Length: 294
Image (tube, rainbow, N blue to C red; front, side, top):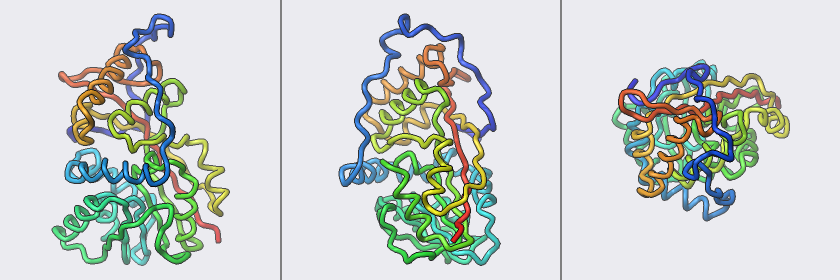
C-alpha cells in the first residue's frame, strides 16, 4: 500500500540522541496550546474535517482493507447486530461493517463527512447504513440501542475521552462490545509531547492520544470489562499525511522541521527517517475491545 503500512512493532530505532543542552533550537517544542474543549473545539473539528472529507475518504491509510477487516473481526459481528460507528467520518468503517451486520448507524459532527459517507454507501449500493449528525458526547439514541459500538481514529480529537466512552457504554446493549482503534502516544514522555505538537500543527482539532494504560480505569468507570489492548505502529509518508489535512504553510513547515529533527535522532523515541526521497515516520496505534457487562 502506498503511503502507509501497519507493523506490530516499530521497525527503526533513532540514532543516538543529542543531549537537551546541545539540541538545535529548531528541534525544541513550542508551548502547545491549552487542551481545547466546548463549542470552540467543536467548531474547530468541523472546520478541519469539512476540508478533509474527500482526501480522508480516498487516503491509502484510511481505506486500507486489511485494517478495516481487522476492526470488523475484533468486533465479532455475526450478522444480527446493530452497529454504531462513533465519529464515523466519511463512512468507511460503517461500509465495512455493513455486510456483516443487521444495520449500521454512523454518527459525526461534520456535515461534509456525513455527505461523503452517504455518497460512498450510495455508490456501493449499501442499504443498511444510515448517518446522523450529532455530538458524540450526547448521542441521540436510547440506552442499549446497539450490540456493537465502534470508533476508529477519533479519540485523539476528543478533549476528554471519558464522556465519549460513557455515551458509547450507555447505548451499548448488555452483552455487547465496544471496539476502539486510535493513535497511541510514544512511551517516552518527551516524544509523546513532540508528536502531540506535530499533530496539532497539522490539525488543530487534535487533542492528545489516550495512554494505553488508561483504558482499564476508563472502562471500569463505565461498566465495561476491558478484554484486549493490541499495540502496533503505522508507517506514514509525510507529504501524503500533511497534505490531507490542509494546514497553513508555516505549520506544515514546522511539522516537517520537527520530524527532520527526529530523523537526525534529536527527539529520542520519535521514529522518522528518509526513504526513496521521502520523509517517513511511525505513529503508534492501539486497538481496544471491552465488553458491556449489564
